[in-house]
Structures are given as structure tokens and as C-alpha cells.
Length: 405
Image (cartoon, rainbow, N blue to C red; front, side, top):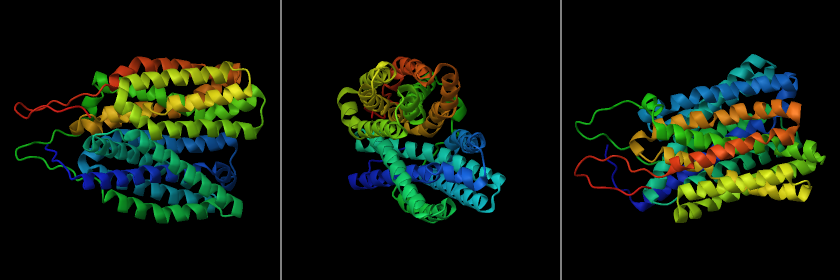
């Protein structure tokens, strides 16, 4: 395939469009997850039953991630993002219906479609973001993932307002179902055009199976797994660590979580400059060390102020691994969809398996001791960081050479 030089204005429009896609994805996710107590009460579930219900969304995502590579390859990132958004929208509509009529099965099916759409949407927008990053010649992925974080904050804020003024979760979801397809449709129209195959060039398929056999792709997947585990552990357990481990109030636990999320968002907003100056591998290794220091301050600091400082370092250290891993997986645009699909499938297992693993350990040894397993993830991140080194895709003889993105 050939990739023609694009006018800077077209690339800049694509940057804005993919930013909107990331923000919208974060908003859609938090629009229902921020009100899980309302979901539990509407369906009359126990906390354990709610956990099982939410696994339907995780199961849908697990199914969507490996399917996303072939979909992006066949449809292009723009149509794949739209397909994922429509699946997610349909799922939220079913979830609203299930809560309204009190049917757990309908709600479970809705969450499965929501997870499926989330998985496809996630891979497709990361492929598009990496392509835009290459065209612009500067680091973009960390800021895009910061946009996702900002979208989750906005979605959670609207959910909180709706809860405060008495708007039911089904009614809130109706608003999301109406608005989301419109926003995403308008955004993907500004995505980069999909290059057409040259005369005589044959399609070799999506290449997902081949990507699962590539050592570098698997190593990048382990890198993303390590940093995703580091990030997910804080998302799920930082607040509880302060409450159970330090005997603080729930308010202080929420503040600790806020410190972590704010630091991670800031790290993603400004990490691009460090990546451009020092390169991926040194920055990833430095952030792993920063996260390690922050985690140790939380686990061994012995006082609340020290633990709060540790949460800030933990957030900064966890900020860049996931987006940089997506960039590394998409270095070769011809294989980007397949490799991002594989890396996402490996990395997202941390978000699925991490919380119950730490919860089971915490039940027996206490939450602070259980969080020591994150040290192992960070050591894995340090060892796998070298896999993110930019690679130059193979080029036909006589086509010249190119610099890595």
C-alpha cells in the first residue's frame, strides 16, 4: 500500500477528530460505571451479583479485542470506530430497558454488547491515533489517552449531577444513546483517508494470527500488561488502601484516588515532550522507576501525607506505558490493526484479572501487603521496555528509507 503525504490541515483535522473519539469513549464508559449503585438497586442485586453482572461487559470486551484487528483491516479505523460506538450504544439502550423492566438477563446482554463495542472502538481509535501521530511527526498518543481520562471525568460528573437531581440511570442513558452516535459520526468523517491498494497488490488478510507469533509484538503486549496492571491496581484499590491500610475516612480514600488520576492525566498531557526528547525506552524505564518509588511510599510510608505523595508518583509513573505501547504496536502502518489488537488483548487481561487477584490476596494478607504484587508488574515493565524501541517497517528495494515515527 502507498501512503501519500497529507496536507498539514488534513492531519490536524484528523488529530482533532481522533481526540473527540477518545474523549467520547471515556465519557460513554463512565456514563454507567459511575452509577453502579443505581444499577444494583434497580435490578435488586447483591454486591456479589453486581460483580458477576459487570463481568458481562468484561467478557464482551475480551471478545471484541481479537475481532477488532480484522474489522479495522477490512473497514478502516473510521468505520470500525463507528461500528464499535453503535454496538456500545445498542448495549446501553438494552441496559436501560433491562433496568426499567427489572430483567437481569436483558441488562446482562446489554453489558455484553457494551463491552464488545468498547473493545472494537478502543483498538480502532488507537490505530487511527498512531497513524495521525506518524503523519504529524510528534508524540500524540499520551495526550489522546489523557483525553480518554478527561472524558471519564466528564461522564462521572454528569452522572453525579443526574444522581443529585433525581434523574434515573435509564433516563440518563437515553441521553447518551441519542447523543453518542451523532458525535462519533461527525468525528470519524475527519479521520485520515484509508490508502488504496496499488495495482497488482494483493490482500494478505488482517494478519492477526501472524502477529500472535511475533516476539516483539508479544513483548510489547507484556509491557502494556505491566503498566495496565499498575494503573488498574490503583484505580480499584488505592482508595481502599487508605481506608483499610491507614484507617482513614472514605473521603480521604477518594482524595487519594483523585491524586492518582490527576497525576496520571498530567503525565499523559505533558509526557509527549519527554518522549520526543529522550525516546520511548528511557522514558518508560524512568516512569517505571517513578511508579515503583510511589508504590513503595504508599505501602511503606507509614503516614497519610507520605502515602498521598506516593499516590502522585504512582500516577505519573503509570501514565505512559499504555499509550506508548499502542504507538509501538502500530509502528508499521501495514500491520498496525493486527498488532494493536494483539497488544490490547494481552494488556486488557490486567484490567480483568488484576482486581480479583488483589482482592483475594487482600482478604488473607491485608490490602497493603497484597499490593506488593504490583512491584512484580513494574519489574516486568522495566524488562519489557526495550520492546517499545521504534522500528522501521520493511520497504521494497529502491523505495528509499524512512525514519521511525
